[in-house]
Image 1 (cartoon, rainbow, N blue to C red):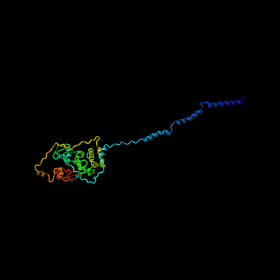
Image 2: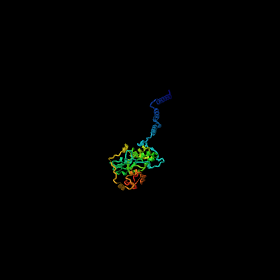
Image 3: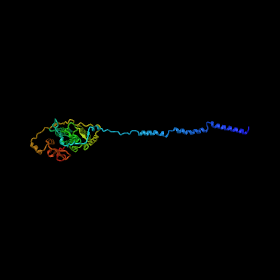
Image 4: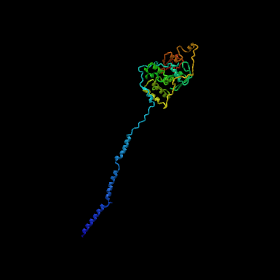
Length: 339
């Protein structure tokens, strides 16, 4: 065999061995290189996509946005039911001019020698021990709950219509028959209707409603509002909007457990002694003490039908000082017993 033939054979053997080593060795670099190329693909595939990662956060945000708004708690008006008893309407006289004489008051109470004013005056005295035969108190103490003033002289005390006659007239009473008007002006059945207070507060109040006048004592507002409503409801009188709002403010001063105090429900005066009437020994001596045409009291002047005249305070009317010289003229206007 020639060297050339041996050389070719050896080369062929070497080539076969090299090829076998490349394709047959599991530790060769080619598979490792293929695995390292594939690894990033696997890793990238296992991570969530940006869209999937952000979706839950958007859902939570959307859910938060969809939560219903918290509404503020509605505080109910504790006096709404009471105020709802009032019929709200503008004031109107229904074309009938107001005349105080259409509402005759201080009439003699049935079964009593006392008139309505005297009964209220006697009943609302915080203490009293003696009255005369005409139901006039000879002593006593009165507390005006509008302003806290105390009096020992009954002439300094007025009997106030809780809802003034003129206010009632413009709130539905204008068209009432005469009997109902008189019954309203002399209402002894409802203790709230008539009350004994200082003459000054009564005359300052005049015919105003709660939107225009309130008792000077704020502590009196609660009872005043309750009494005002009680009168208007009993007599089916209307209330205007400003009046209702003022009543709401006054009721707002009431304590949560407020109960109106029971006050002389039957208007029965407590009298320890009734003075017997003493006839004057000499009529001429009495005539000398009082000027001609004068009266011992305003009640006598009213009973005699003496005409009243307008005084200096509001639209109240009273008697000339010279006709009732014993009465106190608090404002020095020459008119006494102004109502």
